[in-house]
Length: 386
Image 1 (cartoon, rainbow, N blue to C red):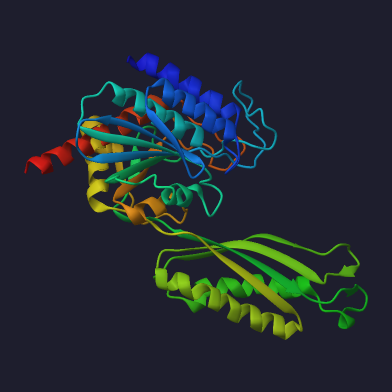
Image 2: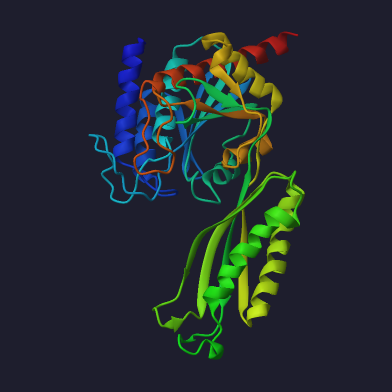
């Protein structure tokens, strides 16, 4: 296939998907669209955990998987482009439409390639919605017989076409919490006859930040974010209830286990001081994403061979973002990496209603995924000979 032909095919796929986004675990039309494309490539296709698993087999050898995520975000698309979302309040603002197009492109390219083994293509639901679709697909047997897995994510902040990765810890664990502060509603003019949940909640926000600065080692990464705070009904009414929702991000499993108890300690003290009460609901989310060294080196070497050493940036420190690709890496070896998707400096951030990317990255990503799969299978064959 010519580069121009590959680009036009992937651009059309990407724009089709971008215009019809669906939220996590609701990707019905998206899944049907992908399945039609996969069957058009004469691949074996089956449903698994709300997603799709397609297989391309040629002779005996190792099995390698390539993964794409399918879900969009609950955002109103604000781009003035012909392929803007037609679904109000739903938008592909994290590049998942590009990921799907690139994995489909890799499948098309690998159909014509010479290899021995199996390439498995995973189209996963609900990456953005914990508990995530990776768990569901894993439980449905999507990884059965797979020897290694690779996944990429478009990145608007690194040079176009380059990649970033690191061996070992790459992304953080992300947990979610909900806090309800219960006070006593009263008149704004007589605060001593009420229990102000807003004041208690305000002190709790500051006190919880001390978990990062004073309760835990400064050498251990910890981020605690209050993402939403809501309470009160009118200017002259003392609020009786406040709700707070947020996230905790860590790498150290021991510290991750300690955080809920530390939060309970802080909340108990603050609310008691105000005569208020609280409840804490703490939900564990995605685990840390830990790349396997051999597979990370394979990605790095493949990129450097194709595009030169300057196309690879090794991250000195892990990222505090999270990804449910981590669940796959708990079960089998693999590597997750980022691919630069914007020309002319930094692009617009993920999860922004104007997020977009340079579509010239689509064939580049498809070719890279193809070469990573082929390189893995060839190395597997060489080890078999040895």
